[in-house]
Length: 622
Image (cartoon, rainbow, N blue to C red; front, side):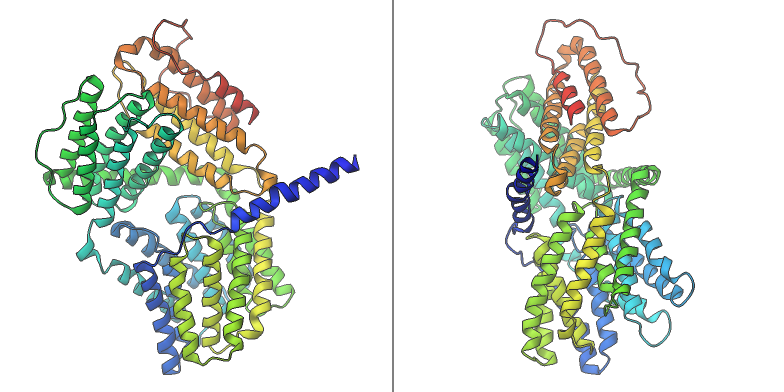
């Protein structure tokens, strides 16, 4: 028995743990030097340099840290979306800084930060924008609490807001010159993806991968349009969703498509990306009913988007739909116990990290709490992997900063290193969080040295605070928690199956590719779950098989033509049973469907009908 236990333990360490560590810490792609890197370099370095030159280094450091908080939210491409994702977190950060400074020295001071952690944990479950707002809320609250300034109470939040607004102004300065460029590029990717799906070799795994890529691009476009999209995106998006649905159905069937239609779609994509007017000439008529439908849907999508007269109405409608959708999502998140449980875990992690840093009497104890803020983000991935990346990145940044500080460079040399590290923070965002954390650690240590606090003796306390924060986050948020990501996958799959069921009627009213968008969200959740530590990945293969089976079922159901309406009742009943099993797996019981579930009829001759029995077995065993 002991030999078997030892064998299992050795297998876990050698065959599972080390590959997971290598996969977590490996760079994903090369650094991308973009305009965000230059904005970060200028907005973080200039206030610190001016403060050092004027002898007011503390004020300059506060402005630089406020600019750094805005740099971390500079993740959107479209200008309207960028304004939302950068302005709202700055306002939340000011509110957090005021809350901690007001309660400082009072009886409620120890409880303010955990209470803000609960609020931040609930906000992080809303969306990407909510997660960024939660991170900046806690970050500004901790920075203002640890770096007090002489003067009125409003001075530290005002200085941090000034630094954040400078980055926002730089990020929005190019809108008069490059308005709509990011949205046009996103629309061009959607049209190119539709053409790729219709290629003759898009069968089997290659076709599935292309359809997945198309649905992921459409989900990004839909999210951008719902949060901060312009009239151009609102005009094109409904038609593109219908075109992608028709192209996905044709690709799932393996039907060959006319090459002229694919070339026309690629030409229209190039025209949209360049901002040129619509191309002249008739569309290819198509050789059959399916190609004729594809050509008609493609023509309607392109012409409806190119008509500038309908832009105001479409944009207003898109904004109304996005606002209503956000209200529905907010109500669902607030009513979900998992959201409040996530908030309680974040608050508990903050409390544990702060108590441990105070117990060991570490300098700058906010560093321990700050690591919890960066690690506990449910929209990024599992806490354990992110904590590992955070600690390794901090160790790498401390090593590089120690070499610079040991050389005894002057203040201007430190500013050069600070500028380089600040520019690398957004440049390394796609490479991996380990390398971005190394740049962040270098920025923090350089700023500490510029503020007049010797940073060389703080290298080991910084590592100790990082280890405390990462360990507290892992203990509070990951180890005792259930597999909520896999439950979220089950819920997304169930919603996709239900929306497919609603689309199967004899009149075939469609809800603009809603099942495929839900599948894209389910795949995104599953990819986050795959980055969990090895001891939490026992059912990963079964969940991957479940997602593939649901994708095949949805594709097979949506490829039925109106002539196959006699098979709709059978397929609809099978999909209802599949959704019920997925909801049972999730533990969430939805309201009964509006349409009654028909009794299962006997199978009729005709085209093959997708079966759900294997999916049900996979759901029961997962």
